Structures are given as structure tokens and as C-alpha cells.
Image (cartoon, rainbow, N blue to C red):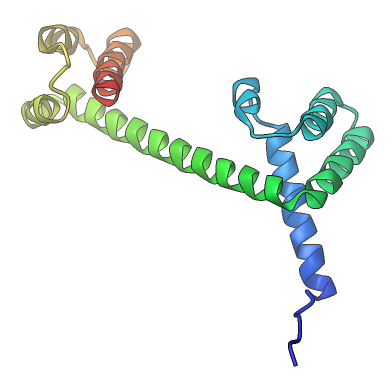
Amino acid sequence: MDEVMVPSRSAKKRAAKEIEQMAGELADMPDAQVAQLPLSDALAQALAEVRQTWGHGSRKRQLKFFSGLLRREPEQCEELRAFLAGEHQQLLDQNRRTHHLEQLRERLCDVTQRADALTEVQELLPLVDMAELKKWLNSYRGPQDKRAYRQVFRLLRAAGDAEEDS
């Protein structure tokens, strides 16, 4: 006898809550990311309505409606989950790179660690303009010198972005 496992009522509620949270994430995304979402016309229209609604109660109702539409289209829901997981990982990677560059900048601005940090920059970021970087490091006058501090980071980030693109 083949018995089909029917999800419990609690499991259905948990799944519905997950979809509702995902709908909230989709509604709060920047416009550029929303344009990339794999949505059917009906779901795209419902999402647009959620994004245009700002009253607390009315937005909540629109989110519930959008969540209901998502629950009726499980394949679309899985595509969106996969998209969000990829975006989340990409965001984590980007944050990790930014933190690494910030730490590298801190070491570059510390005179005692500068030589080792410059060697690391040459190894990790061969496209960085070393003459420009050294110019800004030599002009750095301490924590109050925000201009040089920011410019060092911009140079590191530009070199890192160029490395990724190539």
C-alpha cells in the first residue's frame, strides 16, 4: 500500500510563512534587482502593487495577496528562492571583499605595517597604480585626513574591480 505523506497543518503554516517572508524581501529589493526577477506577468503586477503601497495595513494586505499568488505557483516560487540565494551569496562575497580592502587600507595607513601591506597589495592587486597609491599614502596625515583615507580605498577598490572584470 502506497501512502502519500500529507504535510501537517503546522508544516503548511511554516511554508506559508516562509513564502510571506520571501515576498517581503522581494518587495523591499532595489528596482534594478526587481527588473531581473524571473516573474510571470501576474506576479510582476502584484509585486508592483505591493511596492507602490505604503500604508501599513494596506501594504500588509497586498503582501498577503502576493504571497497567495506565489503559493499557487510552486515552480515560480522555487526559481525565486534560487535567485534570492544567489543574490544573497553575491552580496556576502561583495561584503567580504570590501572588509578585506578596508583592513588592507588600515594597514597601509599605519606606518609600522605599510611595507608588508604594500607587498600584499602588489601580490593581490597587480593592476593598482602603485605610484598614485604611494602618493596618497605619503600625503596621509592621520585619522583627521579623510580625503587621503578615502582615496586610498578608492584606488584599492578600483584595482579589485578591474581584477574581477578581467
